[in-house]
Image (cartoon, rainbow, N blue to C red; front, side):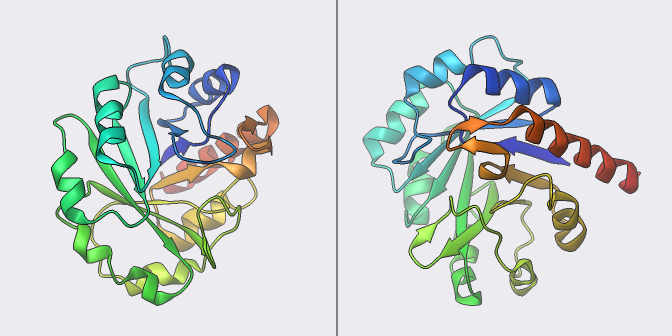
Length: 211
């Protein structure tokens, strides 16, 4: 069971996430209340374990922005939200830097383009769409939608996940990787120590059940 703590903006939250056992950290480089700069990411990730992955979260980025992200050498993955075509992802592919393609789901038709990215993305991430809001909603989507795609690629489940529903999410979807953000916050970008601890306690319960 792998966990990415996303939307990090404070060093103490980064340290807490690593201490609790997060597998990956997510840093939002797009317009958001949780937006951070590359220089901030460098400071936030200083001296963290090399075994913890770092993910750059972007929305419809320009090639020049991606070039700066790649050249920063700060990340293990780039997570793409928005409408960038598969050819764009192919163009920026770099050895040692994985690609996550995010899809925001509200209804079955939102899955129609998933297959187009089979050969360009390493992993898919499924998040919640509410009207024009794609991600960052703090709400879950209808997990049964995942049964309507023929995707065989490993995926990350996102959208309104936290200590209260992580066990149900794991049981109902069978997902092995989760993206956690707003449900462990006191306000955008400010993680709550108690909620993060409860999240990982519940994850340990899931791991014991699976064993």
